Every structure is written in C-alpha cells, then in structure tokens.
Length: 242
Image (cartoon, rainbow, N blue to C red; front, side):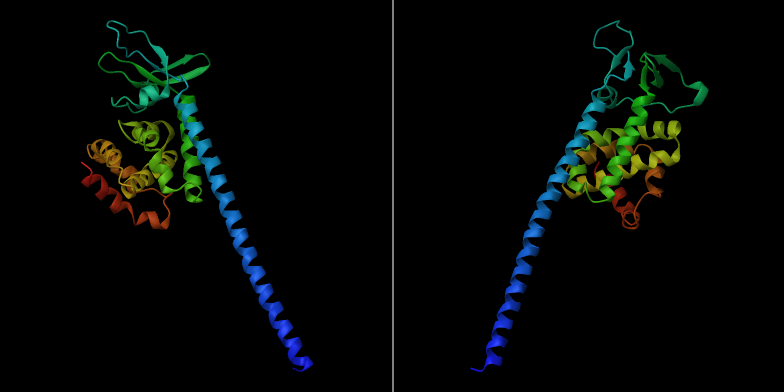
C-alpha cells in the first residue's frame, strides 16, 4: 500500500467520523430543543390557566340572584357565577344602560328581568378581552395547540353563549370582539377534532337560535388564510351538533 493510499484512507475515516459527530450533535440538539419547547409550553399553559382561574375567582360582578326566598340584596359575586348562568345578557345601550360605581369599580348592568339585577365590572370586561387576545396570539404562534383550546372549553365557550358576544360587541365595538370570536371559532374546531361532543352541543344549541350571531364568525379579519376556508366546516359542526 502506497503512502498516498494510506493518506486517502485516513482522510476518508476522518470525514466519516466528522459526519457521524455532526449527525450526533444534531440529534442531541433536537432532543434538547424539543425538551425545552415542551417545558416552555407547559409554563405558558400554566400561566394561562392561572390567569383564567384568577379572573373567574375574582368578585368583580354583582347579582341579586339567591337561593334564599325574598333575598333581593345585590351582592358581589365571582365572574364564574354570572358566566355559568344561562340567562341572556342584555346589550349595552349607552345612556339607557344602568351604570353603578362601587369600591372604585364601574359596573355595567347585564340583566334586569324577572326581578333579577346583575352587573359586570369594566375591569372584568377589559381583563377578559386581554386574556382572549393573549390566547389568540399564542395560538397563532403555535405555542398553544388545538388540544389546549379543547381542554379549556369550559372556560372559553361560556363567553360565546347567552348573548355575551353581543354584549361585548355593543360595549367594546366590532373590532375588539374579533379576538374573542377567533378563539371561540378555533375552540369549536378543536373540540370537533378531539370528539368533545358535549362542548359542541352546549355551544351549538345557543348559537343556532340566534341568526345574528353567525355574522360575528363569518366576517373576521383576524382569521388566517387557512381559517377563512374553515368557516363552512365550523357552521357544519354546529348544525350537526344539535
């Protein structure tokens, strides 16, 4: 074997070694990156769940609904209390809507029928909007996945029933409601993907009763190009869900 052949063999073995080392480094990097991504996702999901729990467990709403007979006193209640009641909210009508100031909070009346008076604070309105905008951004950046929205349906979908989208639109305006309807829209698609039928039935029964509500979901400039082609699927899911 000549010296040139020996050199060639050494160079070939070195190149193979470099290739294997590079491939091994890429695999280690991919595994480490995957672990870090999962940890970051876990942290973000935990923060979202904590934000929702804090909002829902804050007594910044008022109601005189009571299980006690003849008890009509208006009391501070949790946001969760007025969201899990299926009685419809009334749209905000400017000067015609009753406003109260209490404990540095501004409260807007959302119900005034059948002897019941209920209010939501403007703090709760704006904090819930901020929360939906954060969820929207995290979903668009693929940090939150469809499974995350599906898991949170009990916290998300109540904002899309009982006249609440119409209230938010009347109080905040058409452009602000689009973040909320974006998240509701994708939550329904996620629930269909993971076969959470009770969530779809819950939302569909209210959605299909109100033809005006469809417009909030049909025209939304916050949808991605892909989502614009999924509106028909969204409507079909709801039509089939009741």
